[in-house]
Length: 65
Image (cartoon, rainbow, N blue to C red):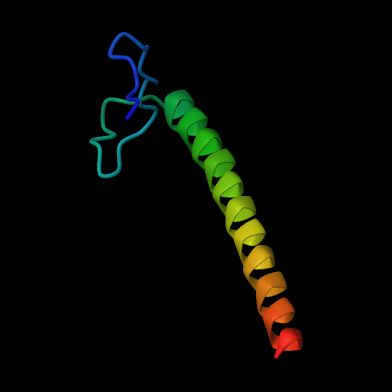
């Protein structure tokens, strides 16, 4: 079983849920919101693709019966 190399650089954590925000500037908060909105859009697109795949499979198996 292959594992990821330990020397591979880790992605910097942009935001942690529940993190203390008091030390962040308005600009930093605005940037985090933009990044989180982009991530939400990516998650919604993935969810839509999964639903479409599931719906197609459901249609296929309903017509096969």
